[in-house]
Length: 502
Ligand code: GLN
Image (tube, rainbow, N blue to C red; front, side, top):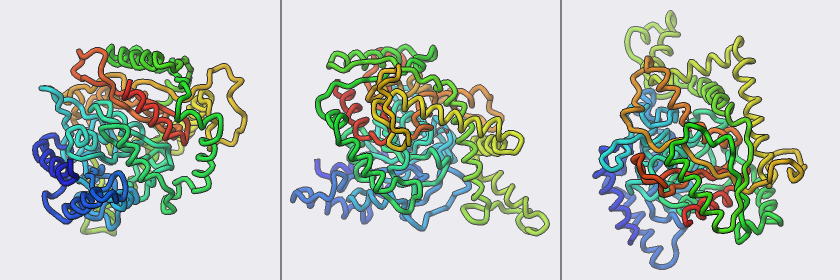
C-alpha cells in the first residue's frame, strides 16, 4: 500500500472512531503534511527512504510538546497552551520523515491507570459490544494504534502507562531503559521515573521507532552520555552476551512473587501457555525470587506523587497556562496566595490534586523519614533484586562481581503478565470526584503491581499481546511482559518478537 493510501486510511479512521476519544487534537484532513507523505512515497519508489518511518503517521501523547499543535496534558490548567518548541523526540520523528498524526488523550499529566482522568473525557476501548478501560495513562495512544488511526504512537511510561494500555488494547507497548530516549520537551510527572514509550501493532515497528529516537540529547541532563552508550554497546557485543541475539537458547526467569492469587484465570493460563511454548522451542524456564515485589507498589505511590507535587508547583497561574479570574486576582498584594490557590483548585482535576496532597505530605518534615526515605530504600532493594537474577551485570552499577555464584539461577530476561486481569469495563473504573471511594482509587493503583518494579529500577520492559488461552473474560488477547537488564533493550525486543511468533 502506498504511504499516501495508508495515511488517508488513518485519517478516515480518526473520523470514524472519533467517539473513542483517542485524540485531543486530531490531524487536519488536508495540510502540508500531505505533500510530505507524497514526497516520502516518491523516495520510497526510488529506494531512497530517509528511514523506516519515512512518510508514516505517528501519534504523540498530549504531554509531549509540539509547536504545531497544543499540548494540554489533558488538564484544564493547560487549556490553550501551545509550546514554543518541539520535544526532541518529536524533532527526531520529523527528521526521520514521519508525520505527527495528532495529540492523544491521557490521564491528566499521566496520573492514572485507565485514561479516565482527562479534562476531555475518558478514552473508550470498544471490544465487541463492550466498552472497556483503555488502560492508562497512554490510553489514547493505545486506542489510536489499535484502531489504525495512526501507524504507531508515542506515550510516556512512569509506572506502566505504556505497557498497561498495550495489554488492555492488544497492542505492543515498549518502555525503554530510563535515560535512553530524551525527555526534553516531555512534561514532567515524576522525573526520576518518566520514560518516553512506544506503541505499535508489532514489535518490529516499535523497534524502528526506538532506533530513530535512541540517541544522546545534551539538552536532557538525565540522558545517557555517548560514553556510557558506547560502554553498554561494547559489553553487549562481546562474548558471552554477543551470541544471544542469534541462536542461543534463552534462560527465562519467572518471578515467583508475581504468581498472585489475584491473577485472573485467562491471564494465568496465557502466561503458562507462553512459557510452555518457549520451552518447546528449546528455551529453559527458571523460577526466580524478587522479594521486594510486594513493597514496590507502595514505594512507587510514595515516590511518584512526591516528585509530582514538586514538578507541578510550576503551574501557578503566572508562568504557564490558565489563570483563575474573579476578585482574588484583582488584589494581588493583599491576597497573593489566593490567585495561586484558586488557579490550582480550578485547573487541576481530582486525581492530580490527590497526588499533590499525597506528595506534599510525604515530603513534609514530619513524614519524610517514614515515607519518602523508606520508599527510596525500597527502590534500591528492587534494583538489587533484579541485579541478582540477571546474568548480565547492570552496566550502571559500580559493583563488578558476577552473580554466577549466587543461589538464584542467572537469567537473560523475565517473563510475566503485564496486568493481573484483562481490561475491566469502563463503567467500573470511572471516577466520581475527590470523594470517589478510596477502594476504587486504590484498585486503580493496584493495577500497576507488575509494571512498577521495572520502572523503579529503570529497566527496559515491553508488553506483547498473546492470544488468550481462555476467551471468557471479554478480551481475546492478554499482555505478556518481558523485562530485561538495564541497557539490554534490543534483546528485550528480540524476545518479544519470539513471543509474537510462537
Ligand atoms: N498508573 C501509574 C500512575 O498513576 C502510572 C502512570 C504512568 O506511568 N504515567 O502513577
